[in-house]
Image (cartoon, rainbow, N blue to C red; front, side, top):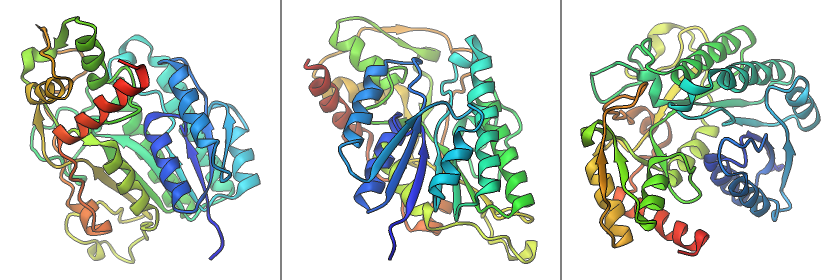
Length: 339
């Protein structure tokens, strides 16, 4: 079988780095695209990228997804079999302070990707969305077939817009497209703006941690290895346009008019924030000083993924426990920062 080519945007990011490593191990040729922005410590991105470059199967272009012509040129040169679009301006809270960066990276950048795919269609397009699109929904667990029309942050609004944009291109140009909604990803090489990273850093430095909504929050914390496994399995499960709407299986988010599907990737096991903090304390062997504060604007009190569709499509059910996943992160953090 001929070697397949994958284009991964956001390849030097947290999930992108882990996914590229997995695809390379599976024998793919991987073309990475990353802007190396300074939203967080660029050194972390440079370290991830340097490790990927140790593989002969990996090559990188450092540019923004929204730069005119960049994606079109990559598609034209490499004709990727699969495209995994992870590049985005991330973060709920930062979208309040700097919404324009979300328009540029998430809206314009995704538009550039869709236009390139229209010109040079891959066998499967896979684009990252977020559990944040479920917004004000209170019925749980969140299933892909639920309405997602009440985003609580501009970040979530741009991701919901990406889903709508991708659906229109899937319909108009017969582009097999899967959107995956990630649920609170954590693990080694994580982003410094994420809770676990902040908690670990503050506890080791003897500083108090901020506990939002006075600890009355829960999240479907999902280990990065489980996220990557889900993506890798979905690559070879492109959606097909159904011949008739009644052919769509119950619980499937497959579009009745396009080769388009939305899939949750989560742990299907919400964990209380205080239990997450306790797992961090146990892994560190230290007790955190806690500063209990109100909920932050744009945040939601709870998330919980219904992952039955992922399991039915791939046979995979994420299962890394929070104590195990947190311990792996803490071990990485201590090693990386030599603390």
